[in-house]
Length: 557
Image (cartoon, rainbow, N blue to C red):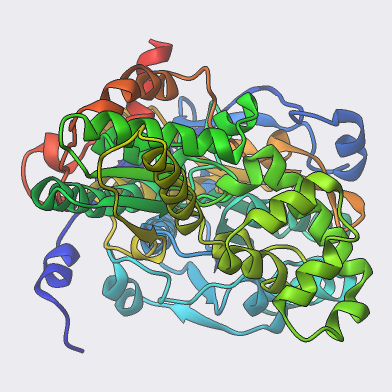
């Protein structure tokens, strides 16, 4: 197979990892902390997770007594990549594989194909030295593929257990985000409830960065994704500063949380940047958002700077109160009148019909939206009938509204400058890049940590590695009970146990650092140009963790 020069070079990269994980496995042990409880709904979750609720935090350390024979026993382990791609996933598998083989060369690792469906349908490949070596330090999930199947029906649970039994698995590692790790928690409980000793361990993956807490400082993949996006934003900013004639509206991935947008803002210093969580907290309307962009455009035009960069999180429209209400009403009305709407010929007729069913405020807002945005709200639904927010071209919505507002101001003699805008959406570009050194190290460390948790006999835990602002040798591998991260959420008409997403904390050091500078960025050209991901060179270029992690750790010091 032909490979690029970079891929060939990355094969030789040796991930750095916590010093304790470099020791002979039989000399490693786990120290136990105090019992834990879920973040909310403690009574209900304790009843749902009778076998796995309330377990203690654990931390990997050197054994003080007799060598641990369990760490060297032969193990058969399955691994699943679940959900969207995130750089570093292959290194998690490589770390798990290397840990298993160091513990006992007879141990075997099976990769389930296409995500959780591979477990349900018993489709897998055994992972060998040759397979693992072909994917070390590479992006994507193409070693075994991924998928979004959710294990939730009785038949799916039964099939999952049957597959695990047929392969005589000792344990299963599920690498995924909040929903995937919820799956891991439920499977761990189900296996024990069925009298099976098969262990289930989770691993924190998501480029969105919303699977985090005081113990999980970030998920793998986030660093590479934001560095990829920041390179592109910096390139666009430099082009804008060169041509001096375009405002670039850039939408970034992150439907529920704005961690990506915040990190990219800290790396590139755009003129305007919105954080969805702040929009919701301050109840900003679309009009107020447009006012903020126009204020920057007008101020910069006073200095003949008719260009700029605006960063917009993917899920922004769901955090704007008036848009959130409109979407809720549309979801309900479209479901209720599905037959009547199907008989209508086009968008104009759909809007006219819906306006008789919506509240006056929702009617007014829907009628004011550009036709393409209204079409996306009405026509593009997911399998559950809900708006697919990621497909709403928020950047184009804001571009159009700003253009109209500036045109009115020009008619009133309040604005004399020029305005021309271009829209972009950065999403898939960041999901499968070659992992940064940080993500290569972090993913590998998580895989090694998962091996220790499995060899120690734990189930219902997620692997985590702490102290990430320090050099990798000083990182601290640990295990966190999955139930500790859970609460009950309304899903499809009933309350379900799920891992709670971590949104941007407006009181956090990273947000405060952004808020302290944004007024300056709005008026002046303050762009930073981070350039491409650096794989070779001095540590300050190659090994720096995300700015969010750095600032959060400084805030705790």
